[in-house]
Image (cartoon, rainbow, N blue to C red; front, side, top):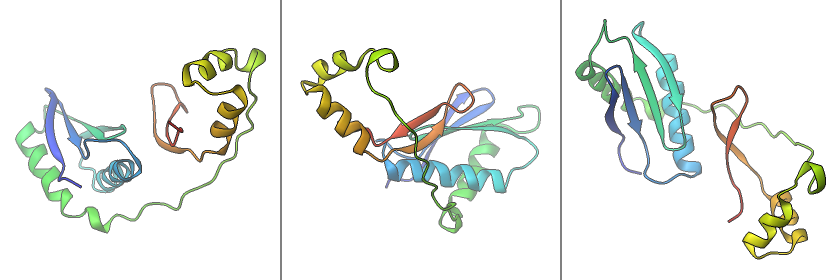
Length: 147
């Protein structure tokens, strides 16, 4: 995988781009970066926002500038191999398809050119991975949806 890129995102934030394509490897690298920066957080580090292939790093512009943050991130990159991910947890969720619970099921099946039963089978058989949590508390962005 390519080395990370540090891209200014605003006056007080830097985007750490860890991959060009989303997937399990990119997600693992974003999680590793997040854990690493949380573990080594200086007082000027205000917040971290993980996404599919990147991590937004917000900092206190009154304390530190882009050059210092880029340098600090570069130093942290050398420590990534030391980050141990937490063990995965399996969470099984009950799912109901069609009717009031899934009014778009027929439209989805038509769009995918599959019978409704096959859409349900494919969706239910997949193992999904939470890549990151999003704009609402607990809203999970997932990897693993069948094509």
